[in-house]
Image (cartoon, rainbow, N blue to C red; front, side):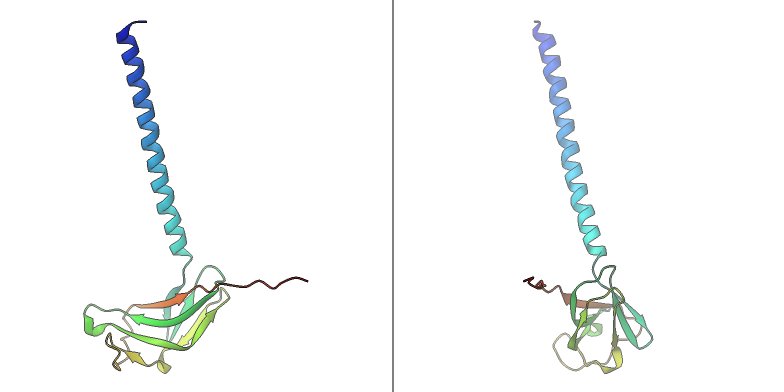
Length: 136
């Protein structure tokens, strides 16, 4: 076998394997990105309806909503309020939280005015572990 022909064959195999490896890495990165986007889309979302906030998600949870956070352009506009008692989200219909009954705090924990109706709100929540009923 000719040495030149063998080098050409090895180069083409290296190119093929390099292309396959690049494709596999790109596919793994794409799958990770898609997985994170899908996971984020299943999290609860917040939207205002009059003097209430509705926390909803595309699935039935369960989630426990503990706080609302209002963000703003400056540090003085950021504030939070504890949901007391925490709201249990167990149905895709959502949870309604009355904004008028909340005690808002600034970043240092001092009492603050409620956020303006244009301030974006986020919900702080956790996903509890769920114990299944034991069958006899």
